[in-house]
Image 1: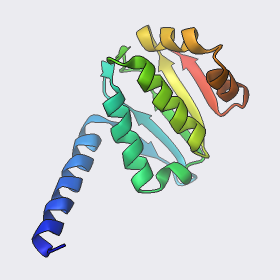
Image 2 (image 1 turned 60 degrees about the horizontal axis):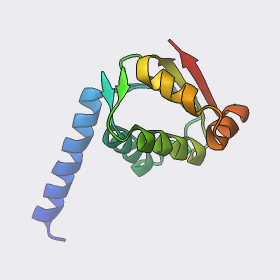
Image 3 (image 1 turned 180 degrees about the horizontal axis):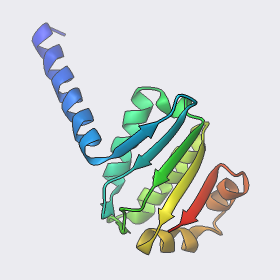
Length: 135
C-alpha cells in the first residue's frame, strides 16, 4: 500500500471515530469500567455495530471489567429491532465484562420485558452478566 492510500485509510478511520465520539457519550475509569450513552431518540443496529466495532478494533471489549449502557436518550430501537437485540446479546455474551443496561424506557423497556423469558436473555440475566434497570 502506498503512502497516499495509507493516509486516505487513516483519514477515513479518524473520520469514523470522530463521528462516533460526536454522537455517543463515553466515561471510562482506570479500573476498567466504561459508561456509554448512545444517541437518541432512536438506536439502530448500525449504531450498535459502529460501537461494537470501535471497542473490538481496540481490544477494549476484552479489557473492560464493567460496561454500562445508559439508554436514557433512547426512546425506540430502529427498524430490525430483533436484529439489534440479537447483536446486543451476542456482544454481551462475547465480552468478559459484566454489562448493565440502565434507564430503559419506552419501546426498549417493552422489548426486554417481552424477551426476558427467552433462553439467551434469561441465561445472561441469571449469570448476572447482564443487568437491566428501567428508568
